[in-house]
Figure 1 (cartoon, rainbow, N blue to C red):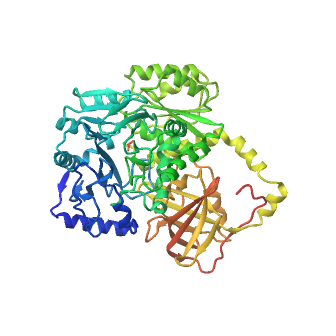
Figure 2: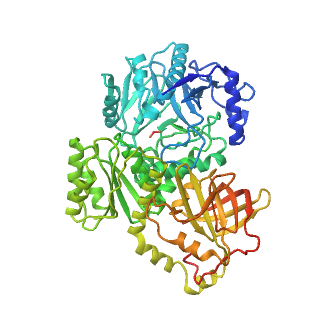
Figure 3: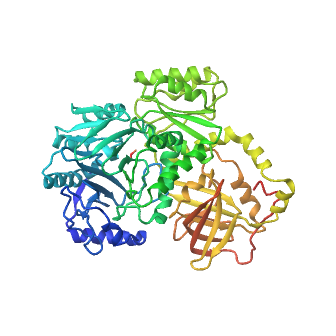
Length: 636
Ligand code: FEO
């Protein structure tokens, strides 16, 4: 890691932020909204900062460059009575491994609670913020004349806990409170003794002055270690990853919910939807707590739209829970890439409307595994470390519970000590399981194409499990007459092509329509379980290739074939990169348009994707667009 302090001072930092803002659209929060923050008794930062006019009560640090080109910065402000946030702004983080689609950086939010008697820090930050975060923390505590009595650790993934060891170096008397699993993970992380208190749901810590903090266990949101902390004095609930989003801006709250919504939803789909049952359980546990603010770990803090946004989690999770088919995804937390890759597989599964249950082979109770495997139509097994006794016990539980003909996906975790996947495959086949495909093997660090492969494998598994019911559902959706009438709707034939880094994809599209003049815009309906859907998030670019009426047949035949997960859809196809977006333009296209996704409207099984056209050209002026004519409307 390389930290290079930028020479420029605070003003340069503001300029950088202002410039970034310009690329992301205006921050529409009103000054009034920010000033509604209640005055705090504790010594938060005098309101020295530094927003647009210097009036907003938050303090920004200098901008520091990480890894030469990525801007990082901290922001400190009060969020409630005696409660201060230290937000680590990671302006240029491209994307988390699996969440390719949105490019708005992220934040890691930590909080200080100043009780009358004791002071607690809730979570910390990513190690890249070592100097910035510790400086901000020490400054705050020094101004308050306080030390740290507690560190409440909601979750031990390094983006929140990477600096916990450094915090404990500075404040060795602090007691770490976390779930049992969390304390055990932290012991591996710190490699030295520290004061700790493993807490259970309903346990409380009294910081004085009414700040009684109650803990709520929220396992699997999204690791087994996760817990929420609720402060009875302020109504603030600290939730770490849950209810977060990857969106970096100087605006600390959720004032502009319309802008934030696609990010909030995409984050839910990637991280929380695979744990929909656990989301529902956690919501049930907190339903009687009078929370008025969600102090999350990523993105804007939820303050203005709490009930609506929390309600969305409930609605989305309940919708998935209605499906009868479920897959158990068995992974090894904090080992290699097991968690990220398993989430990617789970995302691919849930895209196709099948529910998942994530279980950690290293910490789940064997009975829990037996129950989950027994009720699952499919299993995903990420290879655990071969030297783990816990993993061996869990694998025995899987073998004992798996039903004959259960479809299984097995994959390497790239952890360095993986149980060989061929051994795992043989063990499960011995007890009657069926492999969906050969085990997924990793020769290098996972790249974007790897995540694309894993997501597509997940979707393939879900489709294999639901093929029969899906056909029956389509047939039952409408009468034959209506289906024939609706099929008279027709439009042109197109190929959508998209590319990001080393991942690219394509699909035949015919549900395409112009949708606006200014700007020139169009809509494309994309089925939720399409592979290309992951590359067509808000802000993503793609090319719409028009097919000619005399030349469309071979192109259509090629792109309609069923591709194996991770297969190159462009093999044997002539194409060149589009001038603006670099996405593939097919040589057989008679015209093409480069588009950027502006928004998405959700229907039960498609995303209606509204896109602005940013460039285009006709490459064969004599040809007319092919028309897609159908016999019935319940199939493409
Ligand atoms: Fe934001 Fe799971 O860490």
